[in-house]
Image: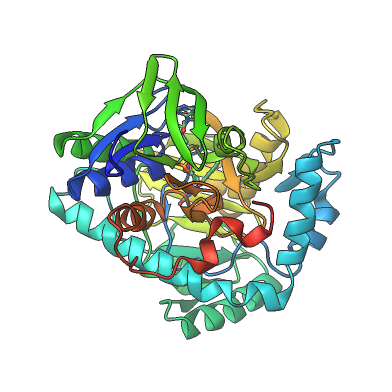
Length: 420
Ligand SMILES: Cc1cc2nc3c(=O)[nH]c(=O)nc-3n(C[C@H](O)[C@H](O)[C@H](O)COP(=O)(O)OP(=O)(O)OC[C@H]3O[C@@H](n4cnc5c(N)ncnc54)[C@H](O)[C@@H]3O)c2cc1C
């Protein structure tokens, strides 16, 4: 039987590579299995917005989220869309989501997100200085922009709550917002600036961290898909792949939206739904500042990435239907052009969509399986899988080493939904 510090990681997205990196650093024998390539274009992160956001303290499940979602439900051009279908897993997920939207359930999760986000941002900064800016890490902050006075008032109220949790959130008036982001359309009411936030090109970061993990001894096996998991009693004993079977010491499931299907092979139920998002990457307009922004009423993030600019947004609960809907792409462009008219007809260099692994309460699932001795789950990172990759990797490495994790894992444990 393989030793427990002989670790097989399933999935080579931001979470899987961060786990591989910190485990290899801790001296474990690590094998990472990825069915495609690292940060696969078919995964959830390839052309995401690249934001590292310790300022994000509101989970996806928040009061009003469901009501707003229902209002948009029938409008497939809206920023949030549920494809109605008879899938019991979706309905179970929606019930759990509705429960998690209650104010008294959401509030205690805000400091948890803050602690995870802050620790992860520190780890990003550490990784960035370790070998120069080799993955394009920039810490220039993040500007939330509001087109309307109502929007700004809501943003200012959220900023006050975030500040109470230690988040750097500075309210800026319209004039200051214009100085920070030249080219803004008329009619912008103001913004909130988060100085702590940073950005990277997700694909460059994941590939670079994979290389660093390999240099520390991790065996990164690409084009290797896990097709079966054999359990005996409370242990996973074999991991079957398209390139042969492997003996399992510890197995870390970090396969994003594909984690529930793999977990089911072992009898474990993970309530994770795919939430499709889109991005449109264009050539960066001349003079566009090194400052990512969130355009609140447009529901679009904008990130400068070298000579490109990426607009990202929308959330579509449509299962694994990965069709590109032209009206969603148009919705992102419209949302961006409302604030930055110069972006309206810039030619797309790349249109991408990918599935975010969303849990009902908006927190990831990180911890040991209650059903197995040697399975750790690191999945369900919702809108924050890049941002929370390093802290997840560190926490999993601590679990494997039998150390007390840096942060309390109780709020992110697998069985908190009462399903496993
Ligand atoms: C439009 C958009 C914008 C986003 N912007 C941000 C952002 O700015 N900041 C942020 O933090 N997050 C962002 N996200 C969310 C983030 O990208 C996800 O949370 C993240 O991808 C989750 O990482 P992961 O490693 O868990 O899963 P994934 O990135 O999906 O990686 C899972 C990997 O597992 C592999 N895999 C699956 N099944 C198997 C198998 N059987 N065998 C082997 N390998 C397998 C897949 O090929 C894939 O490479 C965004 C997402 C979208 C869609």
